[in-house]
Amino acid sequence: MPDSGRRTAAAEQDHITGAGAEATAAVESATAAAAAESATAATAGPVTVVPVPAGSAVPAGAPSAGPQVSAAEAPSAGPEAAPASPAATAVRRTGLLVTLVLGGLTAMPPLSMDMYLPALPEVTKALGAPAATVQLTLTACLAGMALGQLVVGPLSDKLGRRRPLLFGMVVYVLATAICALAPNAELLIAFRLLQGLAGAAGIVIARAVVRDMYDGVAMAKFFSTLMLISGVAPVIAPVIGGQVLRITDWRGIFYVLTAVGVLLTLVVWKWLHETLPQERRHTGGVGEALRTMKGLLADRVFTGYMITGGLAFAVLFAYISASPFVVQEIYGASPQTFSLLFGVNSVGLIAVGQINGKVLVGRVRLDKVLAFGLAVITVAAVALLLMTTGVFGEVGLWPVAAGLFVLMSAMGLIMPSTNTQALMRTPHAAGSASALLGTSSFLIGAVASPLVGIAGESTAVPMAVVQLVCALLAVGCFLGLCRPWQRTSEA
Image (cartoon, rainbow, N blue to C red):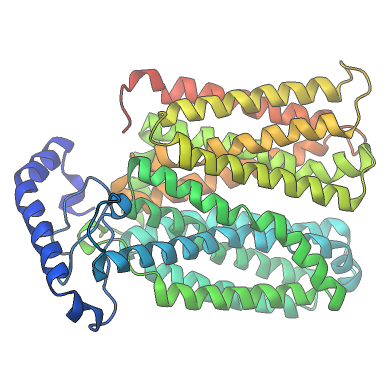
């Protein structure tokens, strides 16, 4: 780790305090110059924007061609502000593009998984493989996404965000194209694993880029915005997959994913610039990366938020794994009704995430929002368990659907809060921290998902039990490890 990364908090504060006046004067001077020369700037080409975490001093090596504007501070001008300079316009334009790019990266995993689901029966017939073998194509992709983050995260702390991301996207495109040509199930499983490993770059680096650009409340708001984009993917992915199967076979789904990957790679190459300055990068090898992760896991509070988020994610995984059988096989709903309910629940998650980002964040402490979200999923899981065990007698589909809707919607409060609180503690190793957050969520979810079918497809009780146990464990980790009452202010 570079010397700047080892500075104590006190030394860093002294540095910021001592340089505060000079940094402020420099920014004001640059801003005035940009306003005075707006006509020249308008024809000088695009402005390079170097995102700076909120509350941070301007990096020593930052370009001096224009004002350095914090991503969290960029939109703070009031209604009486002077007309925006070209630099300010570039900041807003770049912010929108970065939001769309990062949203696309976070949407790739559900697209890769959910578009393929309607094709599973056809793949089984086409490749002449048992259903259990074809199911391994899903497991391989999921395992790749989990394990790949452990490699890409530390690598991005050393090399920067852009190069590992572009390399991962290129490999993702190639692996997806080969999946479309796979002649047998074994080769399909192998390249689905590679697809997941490469696709992990988008997941882990998207979170790390957010940490590079934002801090505190601004970061929580940005995560909520990402949920609006990435949350649409699980809604439309099965629909897209079903429509593709109407005009071609299962291989066409992988051709579509290949095209999406190519498009996203080009967008990343053109518009997503490097967000990790050279002076903040790690210089060590594998040993240094492992020591960094060990240090992160030794942080009780970081580990608490990581496990809390992973267990909450397991509640979501349990719903995704069990809901097709619960809604269609047990309660007799049609596939169209199931798709409608699945979409409504996803919309609920997105809507609550937006309420969190636009209304709650900045007014209510993140720990309070997280505590409320955990309480809601616990109550919803209890209600689902009581309904599925017959305590209320025979209940139909709609009471159960209402319980699942409440449970899913509350995830819009939990996931942005756990990610934000964990990453706020790790500005020195955002890539490694993002890798641990993503890997733990996928692994805990992968362990919980098979348990929902442990008693067969004729009862919804295992789903409710898994959800309740995971929710209670999440509450226990939040209280026992995070101990929010011991911190009087947001980190």
